[in-house]
Length: 212
Image 1 (cartoon, rainbow, N blue to C red):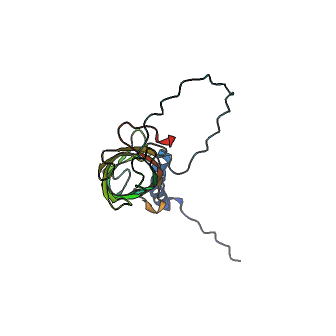
Image 2 (cartoon, rainbow, N blue to C red; image 1 turned 90 degrees about the vertical axis):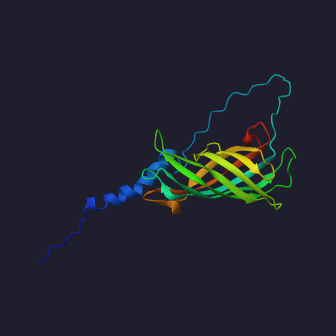
Image 3 (cartoon, rainbow, N blue to C red; image 1 turned 30 degrees about the vertical axis):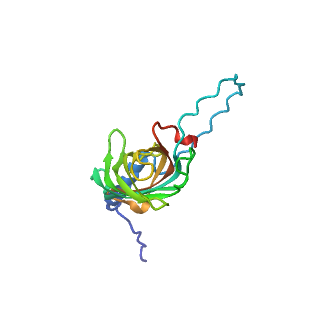
C-alpha cells in the first residue's frame, strides 16, 4: 500500500520577499497613514451659562477658501534606502469662495508642481516636500506658488506663498490628510501620496482656516 505524501514548504524561502513587502507598511504605520485609529468621543461637559461679554474680534478673514485636492509622486521611491527624490504632481484648489469679497471670480486652479521630496527616519518616519508650481486660474490668468513642509496626517498643509498672478503675496494655510497611493508603493519605499483637505489664502496675518 502506498503512503500519501504531504507537501511541505520551507518557511525561510518566503522570508526575504515578506521583509521587502513589509518595509513600506512599517514606514507608513509609523506615520499613522495606513488606517485611521478609532477615536473615543469625549464625555459631555456640564452646561454652563456664559456671562455677557463684549463681541470678540473675529480676526483676519481669508481672501479665498478652497477644497484641496493634490497628488505628489517621488522618483525614485522614498524610504530607508533613498532619502531624497524628485517630486512631481499637482496641487488643485477647487470650489473656492471669497469670504472677504476680495476675489469672488477665482474658483479653481491646478498648480503643476516640481521640487524635492525627502524622507527622515528619526525620531519617527517623515516625508517632506519643497518646490514650486504653476497653473491657470479659471479666469484664464496664470499663477505660481512656493511650497515647503511635511506630509503628515492631520497636519497643517506645507507652507505656501502665492508668488505671481492673482492674490500674489498671499500666504496659504489649512489642514491636510495625505493618503499613500497603494499603486505607488513598492519594496523600496513609498512613491506617491494623494492629499485632500482645505486651504485658505490670507492677505497679511493668517487666521484659522478651520473656522471657514
